[in-house]
Length: 69
Image (cartoon, rainbow, N blue to C red; front, side, top):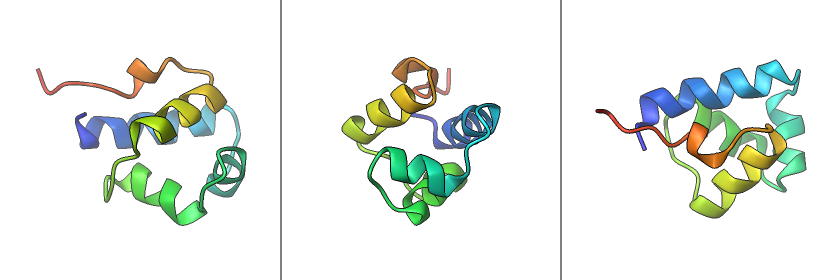
């Protein structure tokens, strides 16, 4: 996963649905700080968490899984 690309995609997808980081975190049973870290590229979510995020944000998991190519 290209963390630079995915951080932008996470944030844009969340904003499209008018969700705050806190609201997204609550929907996937995570902490707001984790969402912030995914959006800044400080860390990457596990596959399990990525699937949860994708479901809430109404995107296929592959939407967030980009290669550098």
